[in-house]
Length: 508
Image (cartoon, rainbow, N blue to C red; front, top):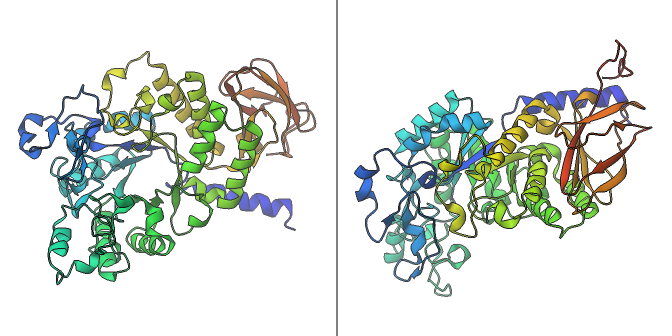
């Protein structure tokens, strides 16, 4: 059994490595380019939205449309608001000042729809957004602000309007015929993602397809990385599968060793590593919002979270993106209408191991139900000095930046029946943050055992959130915590000296 010094050294080295890896514990800011900031030259772009496409007013709210049989898609998929890469670049100061470390863009590939998950050509940028030079400009500007940039790769399928698909469908001798799976047993005559006619799946078993997307030096994945981007978020990565994800990651990291490969994987995370660096941790999301709404009991949530960390590993989770809402889900206020419940979910979001992802406008309190409501244009009118949601997000982000344990620390569960509780820690006791959340509609008082052997008897604790005013003292590793209904505390040990003396003098 390793001695305490060996364990300490290993933990010290692990923390140092994580601090030096930009992918660990980063704050991610997600943007739909069309919906983030209106283009300055919108009047000159009208011809980029020919009928049946529609260019909407920035004040319009997306509404569910009607199915266009001849197009194989919904009318709301071809309604646009006019944002582009240049207008996004003009708002980089805002994103940086919020505290983001990574700017993540939903797809910008050439595509017919507004969401761009139906690519026509992966190598081209949709003209409504700009071109590859605009991507380079945005990348350089993002780096100048001290942030990284990650693009969305939709490599499981393309759009039915893609020229290579149209050619393959019309000509059985086409060299692209084997890039897709044509079979009369499929409803549309070709394999389509989730049977959506507009999204023919790529035949990744064909090496030529993989050469085009990630294997060759001039492939989509490698060429964008060579031009400066820092990583890829992979759409429906679970459909790509373990082996091809691993191959893609290896290819990407031949160009940039620390390129980040994050998979949209709506599965339990454990076995998806090391095929990807991180997953979009929807499992954590389910636990967070269900425990906050009262449909998962706190002690069950504690067991679930502890099990996930044990199975997946902290290092893998730190590179994984924590999501409360995004372009595929209703926004958090629509899931949890009570503001106090939202704040509890956000405390968990910013303190659990991972990279918290802020969906544009969530920091301002934007609302939105299911598709397409959650994809409304950015509400810049909500950016005011008295916006409490914005101030709350800035507070949580600042706490993460000031407390290394919350960003890259280890995880230790805390036994509790009625509270969600865990510790984030490093090799230094003063870094430890004890996260305690009361999702109940009544006050809760509990005794908690803190299994950190460096915590000194009768030492005091304080709450970073200021929700606990009464003194908390550690007695042989046990504390008494009283939390008001629907509130949280982030507790730290008081290791400071009183009149020059501290019992932590020989314990770091």
